[in-house]
Length: 538
Ligand SMILES: Cc1cc2nc3c(=O)[nH]c(=O)nc-3n(C[C@H](O)[C@H](O)[C@H](O)COP(=O)(O)OP(=O)(O)OC[C@H]3O[C@@H](n4cnc5c(N)ncnc54)[C@H](O)[C@@H]3O)c2cc1C
Image 1 (cartoon, rainbow, N blue to C red):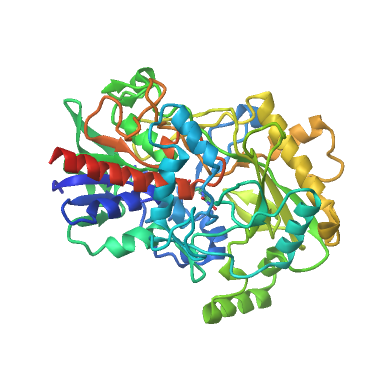
Image 2: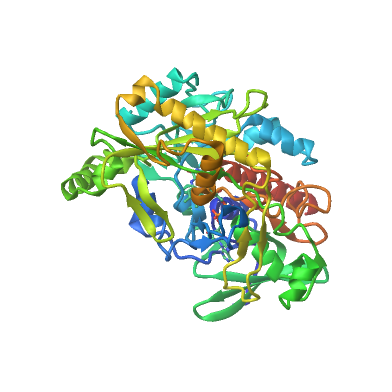
């Protein structure tokens, strides 16, 4: 292939699908969307509870892992990432959270003009079809369906009651005026089906004559000539191909894929590129630096009543009944994501914004990682404290000059005293919640870590041995104005014409909440910016 397009987008994930759909919307511009993974035909993608199955499926999941983590006893941490149309929005937990208003004001304070809360809110609303209706914070009529949980759940209700007993107020809308509090999560679903960006944005656009979607196409290099991006090289089953670009190349490979592709293209820390034998086009130390993420651990309790997903997983009659209920009525346990509720709190009352999210899972696991998800053989639930604002920053580097090899991901979890202090505060709060009458009525005993783990030293050891990525990596191609950034506030790569990065990697700092909705907002705003720039240049 050596066709020429106005825009080439690499990566059809949360951001890439939005970009392809919006850039092709007017019909004026030809757009090529390249996705390394296959179409999103795996049926588990579309069933809300199916995300436990896609968690470890190598056909639609990159299944990366980190390099050994020094602060975590040398463990390699599992990093699932979507590798199909919709990207990680096709395998994620579907929780719809935007983060704190102050997060975006902080982006602005860091020099990202136009990214303060008031400026980004219209793009959250533009993307959204809020099933509760529109208000000051929510939009209707957008491609992304946002729905309430299909029903109330006994254990989630008890856990929320326990949160209230522990002093955490109810919050009916984490994406409204106030983030603090506890409540049910809304999800990116429609009629009990996952609503990925492939469903929301790509499906309605895919018959447009000016949009070409190529799956099984792994971008291996952005072609840069005389300081301008002029095309993309990519690998398919048929071999290496090149597509030419007369307008702009948009890199949307996610927080691991985007810095990897830039480095393969000669944009990155010169010394590292030279070590890898890659000709340096521009020395950019910030490419792959500043990697940010949420960090979490899990606490689990055994309960007396068989009302959890553990009980579903180990009973064939229950599984068959659940499958039938879902197939016939779109209801029952398969119709929900199993993460029904949560809370946003502060590890220290002096903080300006919540720094801990507590996810309430109606299941508990013996093991959860690259080799699968194994629930406990008895009823159990999990409270997951997530540290939303770690100070540690990691890197994404090339693991090899082979463009098809996985990147080398190094997080820097638990680097500072605050990073450990915050997660320990989260653990203590989870125990406090579980000890309240509303939940205590259900619990038999704490199984992870167990009542014997009490001192700061022992809890810190538990965190090092079991802590994991919360799967919200960002900031590895950070937006900003100085040399510690990769793109400017219009998401143009510094010093290279015709090249933008649009995905979670451009967040200057990770937001204090789940990252899918913010990534979609970023893409909505980026597409509007690019179309504005194209108009101005015409
Ligand atoms: C298991 C899991 C659970 C999560 N749960 C939630 C949740 O409940 N709520 C929430 O808000 N967020 C959640 N997230 C995070 C959220 O989904 C991501 O932050 C978001 O999807 C990131 O979007 P992105 O566009 O940056 O990257 P992605 O959506 O990962 O898209 C990148 C795309 O680029 C493709 N790609 C990469 N490299 C190349 C290449 N070289 N050539 C061609 N294609 C390439 C990939 O295959 C992928 O399709 C979760 C993530 C995971 C993995």
